[in-house]
Image (cartoon, rainbow, N blue to C red):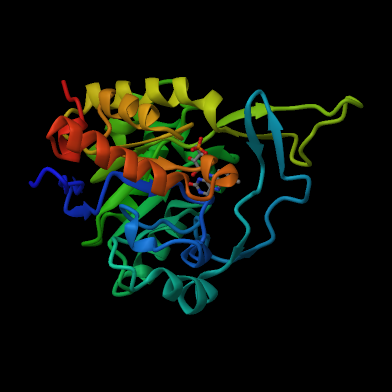
Length: 300
Ligand SMILES: Cc1cc2nc3c(=O)[nH]c(=O)nc-3n(C[C@H](O)[C@H](O)[C@H](O)COP(=O)(O)O)c2cc1C
């Protein structure tokens, strides 16, 4: 490693990210490629793909609250055909790993999407487990060890790496993480949004869906705690931290908690170059310390 060019690559199982910074699913689009070279990112992650066409929740879908964002977008989706024909090609050819986020309302639905994505030039699959399970009264998969294991096991019949995205709403996130890994998950993303609520001045709910997912700065201490608990419970499993990451210190905090890489979401809404600036800051930090990015991760 030369002094001017630190090694920023980080292994997440069999996938080598170009650097430890990737987009958080749903907060990023390939159209950012008109603003900067997407090949600079650690990896690319499109918005969660669902099996069929879905309009998502009605507006209002997004509101600012408590220094963060509350969203109830409801994962609108054009379905698989449009994803393969239009979305996926825009994410290819950037020379950086492509991680496709999927979700469904049954375990079989997840497995079907994995099969569809095989042979499509995808490097890993992210399982967004925050979706409601239709067969269990709409309870989110990520809240339950058995439901989480069922999804991962249903998808495991693939050579593609499976990354399970957990929820900070789970009572015992380390138990959910262990269930995912026992069922075959190769890595964990910790984590998604925290359920919240906001009201307008007239006393009406700010979101049409009433409840939404809290993201941004106020989420950081919660998801940092989740990251720490998961990394402590599973010291050999790669963890990607997510929640309220905007600055170098945020990324270093997640790595101190045990994360190998970080996913950036809401920060991109206010600063489109947030990830690029973070990658530059990590590179400068590593150069100053004379270390590689993978050395930033602290493990038990
Ligand atoms: C508008 C919006 C849409 C999102 N859509 C998705 C999604 O489709 N799939 C997913 O796994 N997470 C989704 N998320 C959650 C983010 O990927 C991320 O886990 C969360 O926002 C926490 O990171 P942040 O604080 O950096 O935003 C969404 C978040 C926001 C704000």
